[in-house]
Image: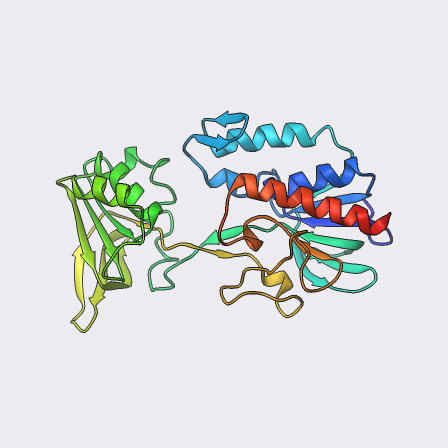
Length: 308
């Protein structure tokens, strides 16, 4: 598709629930729209949900991928342009806005909607990159069978960490939860459930300094506050220390909060006129499918009002 010399009404970056909803609404409202996604398939972070989705009104799915397929099926009936498998490397605000594609070429549009979502935070310690896929788990649900009878370390203290401790504790020989603080931020029911499992233990007030092994993970080195480093053995490690927004494209262009989330108004418009952000990248308090879809619709409606 030749896009370099054409000016769209709206260019949307990211094809998760927020981006798909925005694209569908923009198309319905008569706005010429292009949806750009760095992956070949739409769905965004839905592909990171390996358990059932039960809290989206009117729809249930066994996995996030199943729900993504349903969303994509709905979007297929819309007439907006699609550019999948291509990454936006930069956004240059202006009239029109210019979006640079990593593999070459530019896309121009009157309005931009960023729907780039979140990514899981990493520890940033030695061994984390080297042992990816060799003992560092991507998902407790998806890799439950792999940990049967093995030792697992879970790093984190929120809902995801403690929920996985309960899940993996039913299969693993031993689960060790390592948290840098003295108390958990997870819901009390998750903490109580983990505490009741005899093979789940907690190491509080300690920071992971290194993931070690030869070929595969064999342990971690951690340091307690005010103490000396020590090593504990493990066969697997699951890192659940929260998320951070994929907001780099708008850094130094629009106002971000102290954690890097895009600040938006009630219509999902940023501090720079003509640039919107929807979904998890702009809503740290409610990173949910329902919120993303609603914000996508709000942005489309606001843009349509500006063009009428």
